[in-house]
Length: 292
Ligand SMILES: C[S@@+](CC[C@H](N)C(=O)[O-])C[C@H]1O[C@@H](n2cnc3c(N)ncnc32)[C@H](O)[C@@H]1O
Image (tube, rainbow, N blue to C red; front, side, top):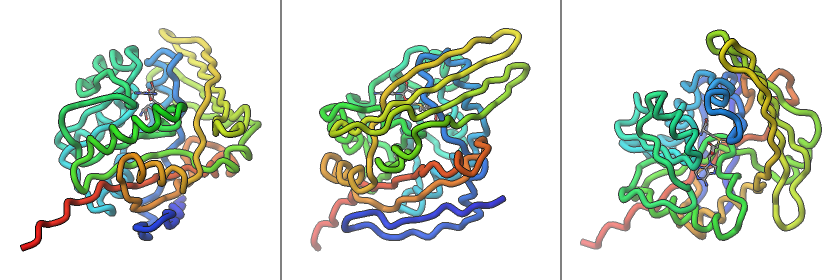
């Protein structure tokens, strides 16, 4: 079943409304993903091991709408490199930055040598990228205000003129508060191993800190890999206008579009699917042509 991505005009001046081909933006096979840093990367890789093709297609499509046909791309918080392995077929030069050494080692074992260990709030790769992106709530892991400023400065400093940054995240403080309670669940199998995952918002954004508490659980069953991992952690919560304003102020980026993603394919009930997950598309300004 096709479910068109709903579109909104991004807040602030400079935003423009973009129209979406509902068929091309079919998200019925795309799921939200958990972080999974305490879990063995092998388990995480299976838990998030659905076909990355639709996510890559969507990423490149919104980049194109913002005027970018990337020759180079950088993923922030790339985990095991599952998206980069697919993106490589479409973009000549890809690079990933990942903080967890276990994830980086696994990425290298899984033929993603372009993954480097590093912190997305403090990096210098010595070259710009046409496209920078962060999947699945990854930017929400930056909690401290100072780190957040550094993150945006690093993004601004690494985008080519006219380059595009795409963040995939759940937006909305009120929406997050409304998700407290029952978990969303999904199951992925690879070879003889099955991983069942749950993601639960335990507590809503608290006061000025804008942090909510999340709990995830992964349960793996297989001949070589089995166990149960559970972790609680905080995620920063944003309203859309707030996120866009940070990008403008600290990275000089202009909003190009805000797209809601519907129907994550692994979730089972309508309530689970309606998570309020968005792609925020921002662009670095083009240099002004010199007067003739
Ligand atoms: C939600 S996971 C997404 C992983 C991958 N992008 C994917 O879609 O499968 C977030 C990833 O960001 C990484 N991460 C969190 N904070 C980071 C930081 N400050 N710098 C680099 N990576 C970070 C985590 O280790 C984790 O692998």
